Picture 1 (tube, helix red, strand yellow):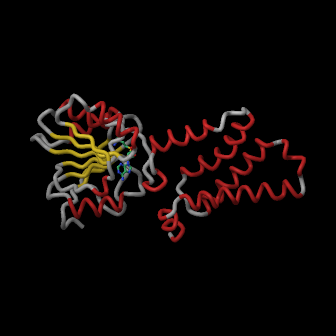
Picture 2 (tube, rainbow, N blue to C red; picture 1 turned 90 degrees about the horizontal axis):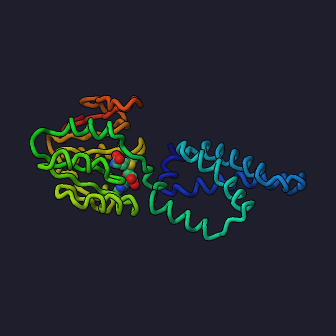
Length: 258
Ligand SMILES: C[S@@+](CC[C@H](N)C(=O)[O-])C[C@H]1O[C@@H](n2cnc3c(N)ncnc32)[C@H](O)[C@@H]1O
């Protein structure tokens, strides 16, 4: 638990430490005892990645860091072997930043709701005109589907990653009942909505539950795609029917709910 809380405050530090572990564990013995191995750069890089990934797990980092550690050094060595120009690294970094923003801090990567999820959510909306928000709306496709099918209702999406936000904003252009905002949904009140939709990750669910209980009005619905709130019984569990055994966890977190 201690490692996890440290990780969420400074998420890049354990990643850096894991990389250093791999570098020292592979680099030192190679330089001192087996310098001939230096010509097998890719092999050494794969070994370094494996050790960094194990160190990362031992430090309690989330599993998705494994892939990053395994790939980081081998990709760097490959790029050197292919003599790729250095600006390509900078461009790649900026592009990733614009698409994923501070995933290391939010611990919510970008992946999109399926069409089946959009249809299932449409069926869950109250039949009267209502207000709906998507926390972290990504490219906004889900909201566009809802807004087209329920023109009398209002839909809001908040997204902090610049490129998905820009895409969602431009694509929403012709829909008068859809508003896309750039920002941090933790700073946005949930008091005005009849339904709050979240497709996040396990990490923010306890905090989201506290926010929903503090802010959502009586009877309003919180619908979480795929990720349940730990230690809370959902009011309904709805199979999204997309073939991937995905569920919506539906809560009514009005104040007073245990
Ligand atoms: C898993 S995606 C879901 C996208 C969309 N809601 C959907 O269902 O297709 C989560 C999105 O939340 C965004 N996000 C994460 N934390 C956020 C925050 N604090 N404020 C705004 N957006 C956030 C991410 O950038 C990402 O685009």
